Amino acid sequence: MTASDPHPADDHTIHAAFGPPPTDLQAAAAMGVGIVSLLLAGLISLLFGALVNEGRLSQAGIGLSAAAEALVMAISTGLFSALVPTKRLKLIGAIASLLLASADGATMTMHGDGIMLLRGAAGIPEGVLLWITISMIARTRTPERWAAVLFTTSTISQVVAAGALTSFLMPRFGANGGFGVLAASGLACVVFCLFIPDQFTPLPKAESDSGLPPPRGWLALASILLIASAGAAVGVYLQPIAQQHGLSPALANTAVTVQLTAQILGGALVAVVAGRVRYLWVFVGGTLAWLATWLLFGAATPVWVLFAAMALHGIIVLVIPPFFIPMTIEVDATRRTAVQSGAVQLLAAAVGPLLAALVVGDKDVHGALWMGAALLVGGLGLAAVLHYTAHRET
Image 1: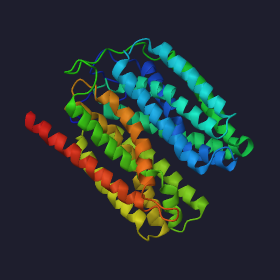
Image 2: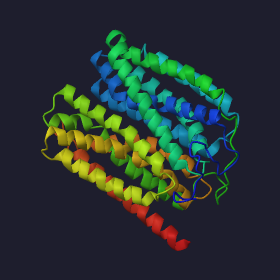
Image 3: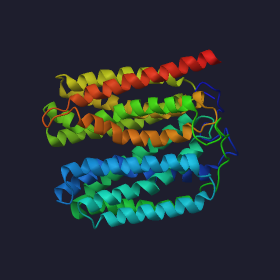
Image 4: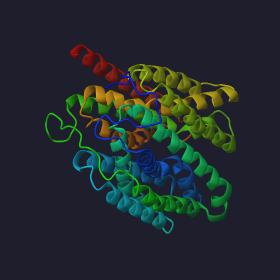
């Protein structure tokens, strides 16, 4: 199954490649679970920055806490995908939701290292919840479309939450207003879990019968890691990049908001073209667009050009990731590699910023652009090799 396979006209309905398709209610609930698991991803800068302003977290603590949560979430998603049968999902999801709500609520009382430890612990239930959603997506006939739906709805939720926090809650309650919203979303996720499928049909065993991806699957995951790390390496420094163009902190925040909002357009674009274009062409086009955007980020450009580049960057952020799944399916038809793609993207969310941190200075963060470009080209090259060798094999 590739991204060029035919698909039914009623694209709003999930069509399963493995097992019976979920009902509309079950699919919506599973998407809701994934949205909750990813909600903090769009609010990290906002909430952790507030913790710093309140003296509850250091600047270094922002990176360490974010990396800890992303790494633990990646490990949790990966281990569950490889080792845990997709059964009793309602119970597993409900327990994970309660644990996540507890961790978010407890963060409201913590300072310093306590925050870091709690955010790392929160990565476990977040990873489990994301595993449930990815398990459904990986079993569909057009997984790139439903991955795009997940990313787009997650982005919309993050934009709405960020607006509510900055306008109403955080001016009154500070960072605790944000973590209170996260705790409430965890409790709401318990309700979502009542309506998800209780189990999914097991995927075919890999050649090794171990449940792990085959060798070419691991290479596909390496390509995903490089490409996703590239986006994360640059993405974490968008606000400083905007300020280095002479923008005030407030205007720089506006530029970043434009970038986040543009991601919705990227997700909508994928929903339209999914099943009609091959993943490699998306990777090539996305790479060229990103490289052009990063070139503008590093050059002296008018403010309107910078804002346009921010918007284009945001669109590509959501165009590329949904097509990771068709790449994994091309190299591993059992889809065991596909269910690991989410964990690898989470790992990239930690790896990219950590690598970028090695090449930036206090006053110049343009090194992140070069790091991102190197990772991106390497990931695209590996994806191209995998695609054309698969073509020759067939």
